[in-house]
Image 1 (spheres, rainbow, N blue to C red):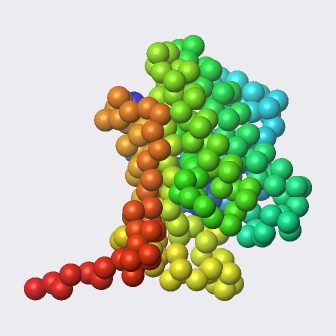
Image 2: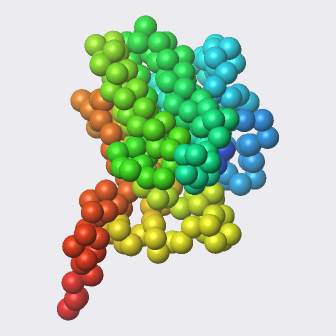
Length: 260
């Protein structure tokens, strides 16, 4: 993609989405954000964007209105990053209400699919474009998140299905699976005592959390011409959590070798 690419980021007002917005603005792209009403706080971002549009990724009609508006005002969308998503409370399944389950599935699974289709069909007709879906390391592991993890597993399936569907139409579709990433939401949970940072880092091969900018760097690669032959993949950016998570069976990750 050229430096003048038009990039749409859903959920771009915070967390990983905000990091992606900053990355692509600094790269010189035209960046458009879609997020919920009131979510965008320009004073926190520190970078100018082309436009911010209010919208819910679960709303089919609104997304179709927005793709028309965006392409009329800013030009053909060449890149889409689906960051919009919500977490869930950690609850046993018998206590997880179907109302909460349905909402997580609606945003994380349906919203990712819907935004991909609304923007991806335009890309396919033009014969060019790339989509990144933000999944999660929980998509390939057993975790006590009985709505979130299945929704993110579905995101990986959606990614592969659309990559095959549109591959010969010039559209690449890939996923990034972040590990435990120090977003505002995670920091708030740590500050409240809801999450123990040692629990989050002890099984990561690199022994640390991921910075949101590191997810954005991976997105920058996948939307670049350097990744022009890459489609249908899931790229974990997790400081080695997937690699190290089974080592507890053998006493845990080895400490750093002594440095001379």
